[in-house]
Image 1: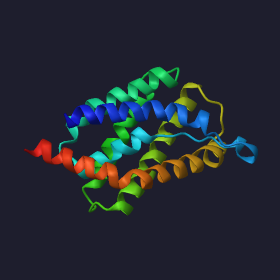
Image 2: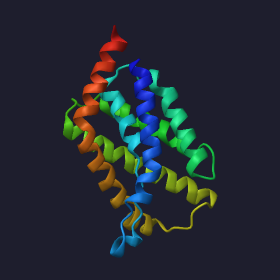
Image 3: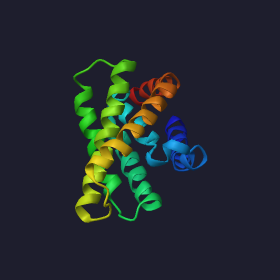
Length: 172
């Protein structure tokens, strides 16, 4: 039952991710920045801290990455690959640290930074984007990291309780 709740929550969050910036897009002097909400990715980065059997969620990583490719991009597989790689990398690092709000925040920021950079380089390599790397570093990456860090702080305690309950269910 909790796995169904998790899937439905992530699916609703995925839809919210795609609509939040059209509704709350900044205007005025903020027109030049690119805010990319990666809320589902941020939550995926928490799984290694709370659930030891990360492979239970591997299909969710792939599904939501591929869904993001289908709905939001013109190239299939880029987000699916990058999300899987990023979560695997953060999962490897999570074994070195004790979990607390600061570590989860840093992991979320590092993960979103890595994901956005991977996607930028792949898109640049295949010619999908013509944005310079400097423009990516100035207009895209900092606002995206701030947005996702704020989301991480806002949802940390409620989602933490949910994942702890899910961990207890999986371990039984």
